Length: 77
Image (cartoon, rainbow, N blue to C red; front, side, top):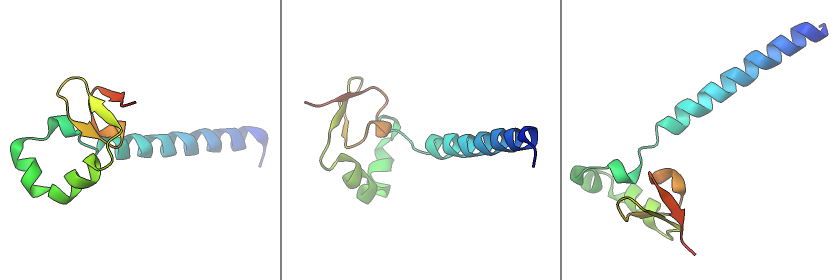
């Protein structure tokens, strides 16, 4: 395989991996957007998100253990 072919395959591979990461990350619905029915339906998930909270949302005041679950997360000291 010549250098150009290797480079092109590497670019295509990285683009595919990056695209998959973006899709996976976009499936996480922030806690701030959950409606009232979301709490009852996903109580186990809610407990796992808020247990040992390290972040707070400055918009709504909700807390989570990872900033990906909040729309405007700030680390709790």
